[in-house]
Image (cartoon, rainbow, N blue to C red; front, top):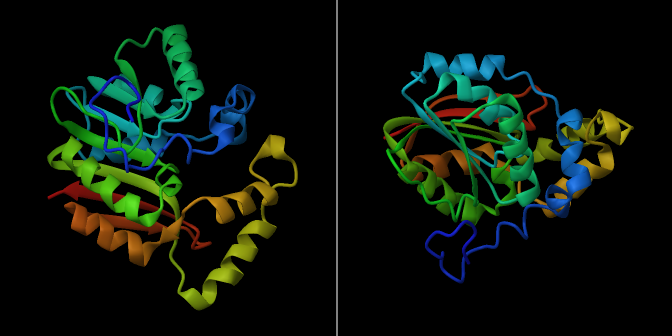
Length: 239
């Protein structure tokens, strides 16, 4: 299996495109993606600048989606690599980079398990709401591959759906999260969409993910859990 012309990964590796969700390769869905999920990247970029990201830095955005973060980061970095398994997502990034005259964003069709980094090691790897497409076995292998992309001391900023509750609290937490979902799909992800995520995708517990990060070669510097105990953001350094 090979996506963007690199060395084939083993035949027993997970097909990440097949696990990305059909909606992520649907052009109509992708065209509406940013409206459903608007994000102000100011705080995230300031955090990374405080951790040393600057005009000399190489940043890899794994699971870049439509490239909103990668394009926002481009003015602060020397090189940005936007990585996604979806051709439809990458087409949006390329078109928007051309429209804005951004020349330092490279698009690579790959996933956590197939991305092959070229050039100097990355200073920062960013990933938001993408790792949950992998089951836990593959998460662990993916995180080891992420560590190999980074220079020693490099930063991993990881945000995803990560459940931080004890087992006894998980069902009430999820029901509260679902109850707060928008009713109309055009303004955000609805309860039925979240239910598909729970049934078919692979969000994990913080108390499973954190040992994976450490075994992959990361030191966890900070973690932010949402009040709902549904989301978490990790700032890690490659050991």
